[in-house]
Length: 300
Image (tube, rainbow, N blue to C red; front, side, top):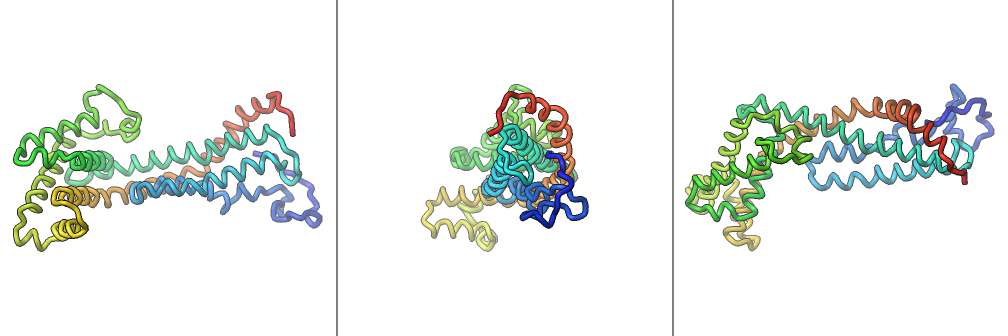
């Protein structure tokens, strides 16, 4: 963003690492790799979110620390000279907000959603996002005690779950949440989504029956072992069943989440440099920068 400074006598500078020995131009250490990569720790976390869940929030810490340091540095220093300027601060804050936070996160989400469509090559023929949403709906259905409430009423249980899935995915255009629009559920076929939802609830109904009235084969399986483990930890029979059913849903998401994570990283890798160039040279260079330069802001 700052214009290169030519003609430095490198030998007389204490911070020689900021001057390109070949061209004699200023080389901002905060805006060059690998240090520049610290700004994208949060995007790496967002790409990994399908696998690591809430732990992705921790990856925002190094990114925000880097961005804060860079914005303050641009405010305080005019390249190698100490010269506080609020205009530089404002430009860099906008640059970092767009180039290091907003646009890369959008790129990651686009990559995840694009790779989500690989789910349609499976037998179920629906996106990974739709499968994830159905599993999350199932987890909530279980946590709310619906499985126990519909005990012995399999048909009613199936219908209630299917209704919740359809309502949350909103195929009827009655309401539109930004989150659901961003995940492009509309690209999925309603009938195929319904079939997967019914398969999901049927598996849960059968698993619950198996845990409460286990056969010898069920007792030899890993899910019954998990059930016994939860009982030994002090959970009641009903809570232990809930825990196992939720674990079953989470296990179904692992492969799909891994595929979406790959998509997020690929999109991020392809987008970083174009985003930097676009924000610095087009948005800031041609539009935002000249406007800020004309503001009546005094140098400190």
